Length: 470
Image (cartoon, rainbow, N blue to C red):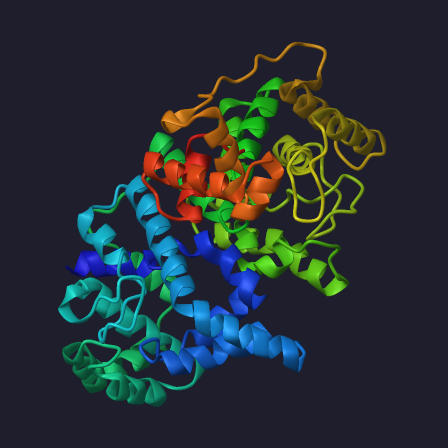
């Protein structure tokens, strides 16, 4: 039981990137609203709804505000059920790939449920919620309230929400001991303490197991924006191939491939209102984007096992002429891995559709890469190696085979899935494929049945795992 609580506490929000796009579409900055509602009583719909309305109507005219409030009143329950179900479904898929057992996976299904049945998506209540998740519900809320306000306020909240939001027996234990627990928290370094508490036997990942875990991390990262599906996987493959062309050692190739899988870790701290914006970014918005390599660096260097990836991963936007970010240093051609990833990031980015532009053709993207290399923006040897493995060199690079129709999908269903994974609505899918919305919806339901998912985020994750989007 203690082991299950440990892993559930760490993995509770592992599915959160799966519905970040949908949350931001309604509320703007999804990170801000999550922070705002973190300390609220999730079992009290009125308390949560106050902030929901405030975020959704910010900056709107009175007429627009009235329309939005009506829309929220009419659709809030259905929207909440769908999005919280999405988070739980993605969490289960990722936890399964990390080889967690049924106790952890079952508890994660109740991430957003509450003791009184006012949670989502199933409105489970009482002891129908696994004990591990009931413990996590209480402990994570109390930590947030204690950190943002005070331990005394956290203890008051536990007492007030007893029997409504939290298991009354657990709330009583916290009220009795919470003060001393907060005192202990003030004397330890949480990162080190959590590592020390890891259940025995501890798993040290290396080789294929580490690659699999980093690929899970890559998919978690890329799920955040529908325009990023499969981005990190594609960067990893091209980077590894280019590193081989440059004659790097096997260890160096492994490092650059693994670094590419997690190079965008920092984007998880950038709001989707910026990542998915359908227009040019303001200076302030781009300032936030420029922070993501620094955040990647900070995340990776905390782990002794991943610190070696940080120099390559965090330099993926640096340039040879010093015009990149976040450090704005001149990329050193001696660090071939970092130069390769910088070139790959540009090529993959250009050939992928973004919120504010259509994708470049492969030929136009290659021309841009050559131009950057000729101007000294990118390393020439690294850029040529990337172009060669992407099929633009003098030698013929064999095309990688992939299943055309994985999961028994028809060709048309693959087309629909690619668009759905990119976040397109049923109407938008219909317009793109010149079919009726009814036909598009029919395809979507068939796809979900065939691949055994029920939400867009889970379908997008399945599409990444099966190379339908990349």
